[in-house]
Image (cartoon, rainbow, N blue to C red):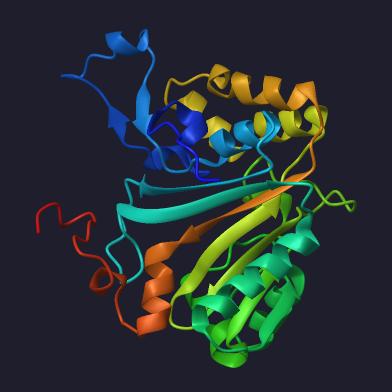
Length: 274
């Protein structure tokens, strides 16, 4: 079911890096927000989880995501279309199958999808001569190396410290139950995970996250996330979800060099008018 989600949010609407949030104000006055900052939403994920907890088992939204992204590249934008979904009673293996079937359906033909763990991806990249160590996020160059060799790649089980705080911690305690789908010529197009449903672990992950550290350094407060922590406390629901970068899917299908060729009105750090 498609559902409505807020577009002006608190920091709980950020995708990991709160430093890329666009602040909303009236002449710099935040009085209308009770002296608290409002932002343009980057993700609807936590709001979609609210619907799942309230009894709608499978939900999605189609919205613009806003990121104060300083990089001026062929794959980054400050405004882009993001399709997000959440599903109750879905674990990581089911999410992986869903993502694979989705890209096969979009591509209209059957093709192999290489599934590998983050750890194995790092070992393969090191063998290819890339300067990367376990714990580094996969760069655009790393994604290009993997997709050049394998085609479509789905990387699972990243280290927990470099992923969003609500991704479910694996039994090892070192990784999270997540998966990123990489497309040739594009890179990451879908990112998803099974969500953490154990309140104590979820709260600890938030309190030790880089995201919260950035928020506090910027004068923000943990209370931005209290509504979400209270929601998870009520019942540990098994659920998974993902975000699909629609423009990157179009770039993959059309084999365009730049993502800016795949949208009507591209927006980046240098372009705010047609």
